Image (cartoon, rainbow, N blue to C red; front, side, top):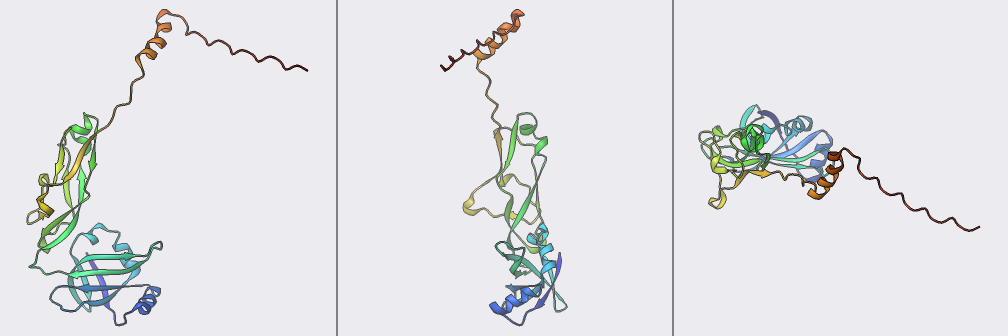
Length: 224
């Protein structure tokens, strides 16, 4: 995914405020071979539409700056508390030979065809929606597909069960094997008490009518 950035000469709170008022968003690019971070600015409207796309958050981006392309990753976006306004954005330069840590979204499919959901009345609870991975920039996937068609009642899907693309490994903190999807049994509605059911069925079985309720006693008339 490609976007255009421009070098930013003026910095500071006042300069950033004036930049936002003109329809631009201040940002910064750091890391890589360069020793100093570079202040940049971007068109806010174009950036606003870009951040709504999943690929902008989970893939290596092509940043055009001063006629040259740079490989970067989105690292942070600062939003206004209540306005539709991006206050600041951070990018990290990417080295093609250095592995990177990145959170990649999980795309689930097939849960409605699984034995757990289709026949056993369970639901698939998505415990995780993204996975932290380690890989080279060229191997970074936009998402990881998760097939749930084999889910069974009483079983869960763990990180070790995922099929990862070539060159991609999951980052497991503390050598753990966290749950990705758990199978939850839906509680059946409570049945009506047997005594009430039998009482309601008795008149119908004899061909009669259910006994009517006795009329409520009338209150004595008030004396004049």
